[in-house]
Amino acid sequence: MGLEVVCRLVHAPTFDEICSMSWEDVYASLESNELRKLRPEKDERLERKFDIDAEAELLDWMDSFNHKISNRANSFLDCLSGINDSTDGLLLISEWCSVGAWEVWEARAILYFENATGERVENSNDLISLDTWTQIFESLNGMNESEFSDKVCMDWMQRRLDLGETLDETKDPRIAPTFEAHSRNSKTLVHAVNVLENNTELKPLFGREYLPAFQWHYGLKTLGMISNE
Amino acid sequence: MDYVCPNIGLLPIWDELTKHCKKYEAIMSIKKDEIGYYRLETPSKKPFIATCVQKKHVGLYSVVMYRHPQVIPKELEDFRIGKSCMGFVDFDESFDLIPQLLDNIFQHYASTEKF
Image (cartoon, rainbow over all chains, first blue to last red; front, top):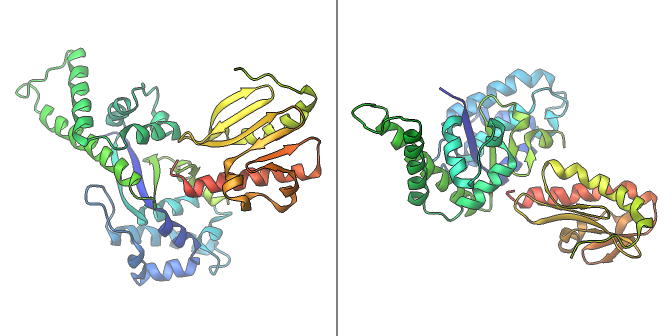
C-alpha cells in the first residue's frame, strides 16, 4: 500500500474558535464530550474519524504535552509556541474541525491530478504543493463529476494499453475493482472541490501521510506558520 | 508595452521595498520581476502586492490598502498617495514598518481567501 494524499475540508470558524480556547478548556470539554457540539456536520461522501476516535487522539496528544505547558489558561495556540512537534496538535484539531477529507493513494492521485490540471506530475512533492492544488480547484470547480470520472477512467485504460497490459476482466480480476475505485475517487474529488467552493467557511488543508504536520498547507499558510504566529 | 524604469535614482528605494516583498515568493506567484517593477499574485491569481519606480516616487501597491485601510500601520499613513498606493521618495525610519504592512496584507488574504 502506498502513502495517501489528503485534502481535508476544515471549518475555519471552528478551527479558529478551538485554537483561541484555553488549553484547559479544550481538555475539559473533550473529556466531558462538550466539544462535540462544536464539531461541524460530516459530509456524507468524505472520510472523517468518528467523534470518539478524534477526541481520544487529541486527548492522548494533549496528555503527552501537559507537563510542558506552563500556563494552561493561555489559548491553545499560545500554548503551542515553544513546543517541538506542536503542529501535530493543530493537525489533530483540523481533523476535529473538518467536514471530511478526500484521501487517495499517491500513485492514483497522479492520474487524477494530471487529468485535472493537464500537466505532468514530476515528483511526489507536486501532489502536495499549493500550485497544484490551486490548479485542481480552479479546473474542477463546477465540473460535472461523471465528465471528470470518464476522462480519468479513459486515460487509465489507455495507459494500461500503452503498457501492454490487458483490459480483459477474465485475465486480471483486479481490473473491475480498480476501475470502480478510479471512478469513485475522481467523482469524490470533484465533489470535495465543489463543497469547498460553495461554502465560504471551509478552507482546504492538504498534505500526505507521514508528512511532518508543520508542512501541511492550510489555505495560504502552513500549519508551521500558524503555530509560530 | 514593456516597462522602462523612468528614474534609476529611485532604484535603491525600490530595491529595499521589493526585498521585503520577496519573502512571499514561496506562497505567491511572480508576475513581474523587472528592474524597477515587481508584482506578486496570490495562487488564485488575485493581485497581492506590487512595487514600481515612477518618475518622482516608488509606488507600493495593494488593493487591500484601499478596501481595508486598517492594515496600514499608523506611522505609514502619511505615505499614502492614492487609494491603494503608497509613495516613497527617500529612505525613512518608517521603512522598518514595511514588513508589518506586508504581513498585515498577507494575513488579510490568508483569512479571507481559500488560496
